[in-house]
Length: 154
DNA sequence: GCCAACGTTGGC
DNA sequence: GCCAACGTTGGC
Image 1 (cartoon, rainbow, N blue to C red):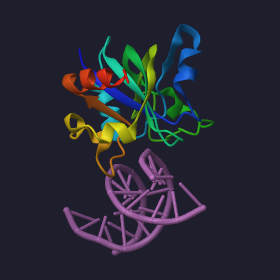
Image 2: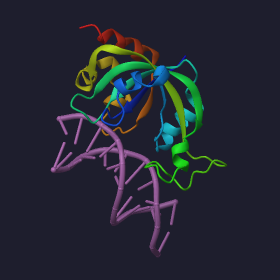
Image 3: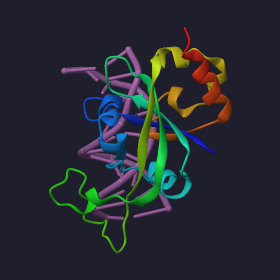
């Protein structure tokens, strides 16, 4: 099993929003970055676990756990001229953008803020804590995953 | 709201 | 294929 971290701006889509979806499941649409696209299309597998990260907000940090429940398939919002994610270069015949379906598992016991993650030496190689990184989806090493979960307890 | 860092676009 | 211009991300 592999581990991941996915960012979302809580004003657009938060962990609470996910929890309140039917089946507590939602497709992760709107990603328009090739690296992130490749991970969703090729690497994220059923049962993989994912940290939900809130970005661009008062307290950026890890807020919950989720699980991949459907592997990569075309992001249909790219086909819809009404969507803000519309991309005329993506067609159903030759889709350019992909998404996965994600299911809520639980909130973390507390928000684990970015400021705290940055202070952890074992996490210093995570793209998340590196300056200028803009990846909205990234792999998490097994040891990093376990380490972060231990931070949950104050 | 600012701005550094980064990715993408398009002229040449 | 280079690179300037532009747009976006996201912490602060």
